[in-house]
Image (cartoon, rainbow over all chains, first blue to last red; front, side, top):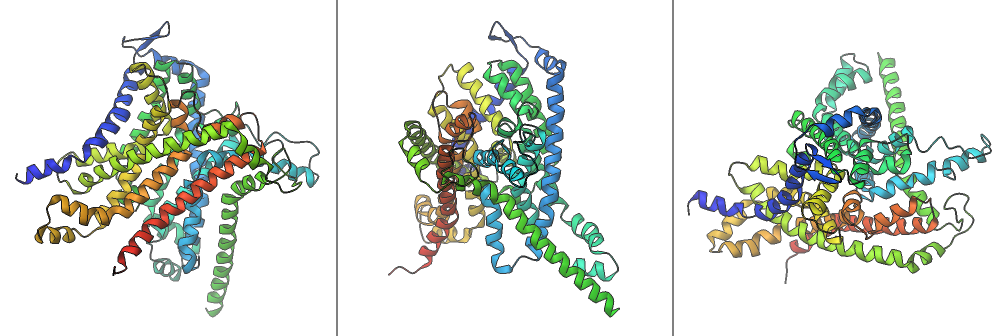
Length: 286
Length: 277
C-alpha cells in the first residue's frame, strides 16, 4: 500500500461521477457524432457513413442564414450586455457604499439564478400586444391601437438575451475590477490622462482576462438558446437552437445530429482557444 | 492649477452621480419585468396586464384548484428530490479526488466533470433523447428527465464542495490521524462536518436548478409536465393571470431556496462555533 495504492483508492470517488457523466453525457455525445455521419432511410437510421447531413444543412439557404443570424445575435447581445455591465461593475466596485456592496452584488445575481423561463416570459407582459409598453404608448397618446413591432423579431430576442445574461457579465467584471488598485488611475490622471483615457489605457488592459471570461460565458450559452427566440422571437427571430429542436422533434435524428455537432464543435473550439483565460478560480465559483 | 483641480473634482462628482443613477436604472431594468409579473398576478384584470382594476386572489385560487397544476407541482418536486440526492452524493464523492489525488488525467477529468455546465442544455437534452429512445428504446418518463437534469446539476455540487475542500486546513485531518483516528473516523468526525455546509448549499442549489430547469426536461419528460413545462405550454396560448399566479409561486419557491442555499451553510457554521455545554 504505497503512495500509488492510496492514490488509486482516492480515485474511487470519481467512479459514480464518471458513470453518470460518462454514460449520460459522453456516450450520448459520441452517439450524436456517429448519427451525424449516418443516414436515415425510410425513418430508420442506417449505419452507412456519409457527409450528406452536413451537405444538406449547408445546401438549404434558410438554415445557413439562421446560422449566421445566430452568430450575429450572439455577438450583438454579448457586446451590449458587457458594455452595459462595465460601467455598472465600475460603480459597484468604486462608488457603491461599502456596507451595501455585498447586498447590491447579491441583488444582481439573484435574478440570474431564479427561473430562466419566467424571466423570458416576463417580457411578454411588457412587449406584447396588450403589454405594458403598448398600454403606455396608448395612454400618452402616441398611438391609438396596439403596435406589434416590439415583439416577435430579432430586436426583441437581443433585448431579452441582454436582460438574461447581464448579471453574469456584471458579476465577472466586478470580480476582476475589484482587485484593481485605484491609485493607478489617479496616477495616470496626475500625469495628464483624461478620465476616459485612464480607464481605457490603465484599467481595461489589466482586467482583460475578466473581460474575456465574461464574453465567453455570455456568448456560449446564447449560441444554444432555444426558449428566448421561441417565446419572443416569432418567425423572424429563429436561432440555431430552434432548428436543432425542430429536427429532433420531427425525429430527423441524423440531420439534427449534424447541426448539434456543428454547434458543439464550435463551442469546444472556443473553450480550447480561450482555456487559459478561463481561470479555475472563476470556474470554481469561489 | 487650483481651478483645474476644482474643475476635475466637479467633473468627478458629476460622473459619480451619473454612474449612481445609471446603476439605479440597471436595477430597475433587472427587476421591473419580474415585478410586473408578480403585480399582475394580484390584478383583477383578466388580461393579465394594465390597467389595475382591483386586487384579488382569484388567480391563486384558480391555480390551487387546477388539477394540471397539482400534477405539475408533484412531478416537479419528485424529480427535484431525486436530482438533489443523486447530485449531492455523486458530486461530493467526485470532489475529493478532484482536489486531492495527484494522479495523471486529473486535469482531463476535471474538464469532463465541468463540461456539462458549459455545453448548452439543448445539446444535453437531444443527445440523451437519442440515447434513450433510439439506442435503448426506452419510453420517456420523469425518470429519464431526472437523469438528464442530474448530468447538469452534479457539476455545480462538485464545484461547491471542491472549493470548500480546497479551503480547509489539512492539518486538522493529520492531527486526527496522529491522535489515532482511522480513515472512517477521520471522514465521519472531521472531514464531513467541515464540508457539510458546502454539501448542503450544493444540494439546495441542485434542487433550485431542478425546479427551474426547462430545456433538458422538455426533451426527456415525455407525456408528463413539470411546472416550467406547464407554464410554457400555457403561455403559447397567451398570457393569463392564472399563469402569472403559478409563475409567482414558482419564483417565490426558487428565491426562498436560494436564500436558504446562501444562509443555511453560514448558520450551520456559526452554530458549530458556539461552544457546546
